[in-house]
Image 1 (cartoon, rainbow, N blue to C red):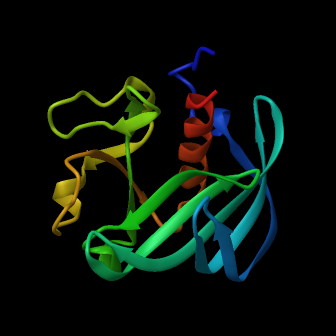
Image 2 (tube, rainbow, N blue to C red):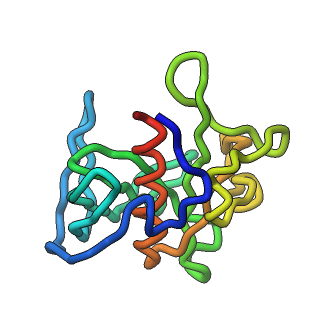
Length: 166
């Protein structure tokens, strides 16, 4: 499948309606469960029709940091994007998602600063993860930066990742 790199965020996946919102959303990973404090659920449209998008908001240990902001975006019950809070989240409200590229098996991170960010990410604000998170074990990766309230961008990134996996 060819991904059109000049697509706007709305052309990848567009939110059209709020379906619901609530507390205590649990996602089942293959070998564990993770509970999110809150969620918002949308109806969205993409090139292949209607989809259900759920955004889960919570906290968990990340890079050895307790209670770090965590956001996941699911399309039709499958996680396509994961975000973590930037060091300055309490002031900026910004969350970060590592840029992924094809690897030998599945996907791998796009290495910061050695590798060029793929052109398809031009529609997003992209920065080096180590510039935004200063903690032991932080990957040298490029990361998409979005405000936690910018659901349009969160959904567009998940939509792009869905297209990449086709």
